[in-house]
Image (cartoon, rainbow, N blue to C red; front, side):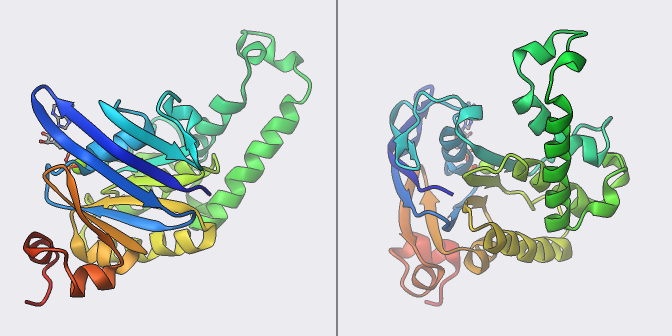
Length: 256
Ligand code: ADP
Ligand code: MG
């Protein structure tokens, strides 16, 4: 768990400024949604937070530590995107193990032919299996472990993608429209599952969606973005009943 702070983030692509000084203070364990129309800068902001895109100016801090120059894998964040990006040739179980193996293998072990000489290798595999088991229990995907992604439904695939993000015990989850490829009924179901996951893990979530209903039902607070700016950052109740201005009211669909 960790606080997440964005301070005066600016970002341009060429001559177009797509983030115009965005600041957000997200509390430890909070579920925050970034909402706003397509092209307003939500994904760019999330990528900057993850370290996948550099900002032109401003600071990103995680757990109170400025991470501007820390690479993505060292930020201890989990990213889940709308495209599941599972390895099609690996089983669900193997997909879940990939992030753990990548992290735990040290240089010695990567030398061909020497891996089996490493003491503790078996112990590591044991630990990896334990983490995978815990994750599959939480997500109720234990019966899918032997399948390949092509043999899963959209909802099951999304659950495995969440599982793969979970195994590294991230301090925060970043999700970019994770449900937008699912049909309407499944989307509503998965919404509840993600909310439950948030309750269970008590981890900070930053959740991007263009679906205001999704944001209103799931979030502790909502940041309403437009044209590279945050117009309002408040509870769903406040955003809905006391919108900061007409643009927020229109986007959220507040009663006039
Ligand atoms: P959102 O996720 O809210 O739909 P994005 O953050 O993806 O918005 O995009 C914000 C703006 O930045 C858009 O105008 C988009 O075209 C532009 N943009 C995003 N990524 C790039 C890029 N790599 N190169 C150039 N322009 C980009
Ligand atoms: Mg986007």
